[in-house]
Length: 120
Image (cartoon, rainbow, N blue to C red; front, side):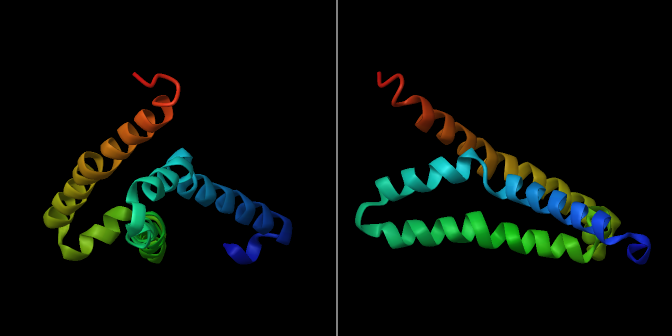
């Protein structure tokens, strides 16, 4: 299929995918969160930086690489361990990401953004 695409179409797809990945990885959380972690970490700023690099850069890139090996088909990705166990693992990953990553990070970003405006 790629052989049929001309250079202009390939370039436009590359630009669109590049902007999509940039938008996924660099949001308000990656703009506000590192500054707050650095301010609160004090003398342990290297540990804060290391944690942010692992959680904010390395793990998302590994996930992007892993799912690209399966051409974006997450069902096929998780089916490697079996249909039912794959479904259970995928469900647990989504639930745990919501509980332990997305919800605390969203609430922290909201709190950190509104604290200067409403200090009390």
